[in-house]
Amino acid sequence: MPKLNDFVFNICSIIPLDNHQIHLPSNEDIQRTLIGFTNHQVISCVDYFSNKKNGYCHIYTYPYTMIHYENLTNNFSGGLFKCVQTVKLFDERPFEHTFFMRIAQSFPFLKYLTVSNWQPQNDKQRQKSNDDNQDFSIIEYPNLITLHLLHIHDDYAEQFLLDTKTYLPNDIHLVVDYDLLQRVTHNFTRDATRINYSKVKDLEFHDQVDLSKYV
Image (cartoon, rainbow, N blue to C red):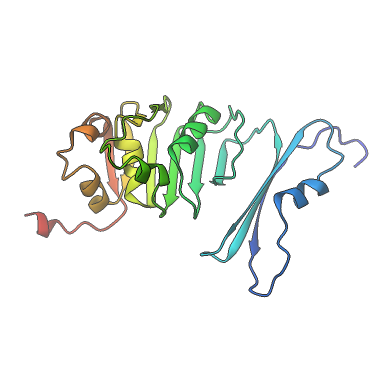
C-alpha cells in the first residue's frame, strides 16, 4: 500500500494459555515488533489471567480515536482519551483507589462504566480502622450516565457509593446485585452512602431478587 499515509488501528486479541507453554510474550517483546510507525505513537498492553487461563493483548495507535475501551486492567498506563465514552474494567488483581483516579483523569468524557473484579482492595484493608476511608481524595466522574457493577467484590460498590471516595453526578443508572447493594448500604441506612445513592435515578438488578424474604 504505497499510497497509505496514515494508519490508525485498535487491535485486541486473546492468547490461550497452554500449561506446557514456557515463553509468554511480554509487553516489551510486543513493543519491539512495533517499528516503523512515524505518524502515531503505538501503545501495547498484555495481561495474563491465570483463573481464566488466557491472556489479552491490546495494541492501538495514540491519540486514541475510538469511543470505547474494553478489558482495561491495572496495566493501563494512563494518557488522555477524549473520544472514549465507554470503558470496561476487568482484572484478577485488585483495583485500588489510585487506579480509579487515573481512570477519571484519563477519560474526562466517560459516560458508561463497567467494573468486574472479585479481588478485595488492598488499600481498603489498610484503611480498615477508618470505617468510611476519609483519607482518600474524592474522585469525580462529571459525565457518567451508567455505572454497571458486574461480578464485583463489595469494595467496588463502596468505591462508588461512599461520598468520601467518589462524587457521582445526578441521575445515574446503576446496575448492581441487590444483595450486594443491601450489604454495602447497611440495608439502605448507611449515612456515608446516602448522598451518592440518592443520585441514582434508575436502579437495575442483574440478579434475581427473591422479594418474599423481605415481606
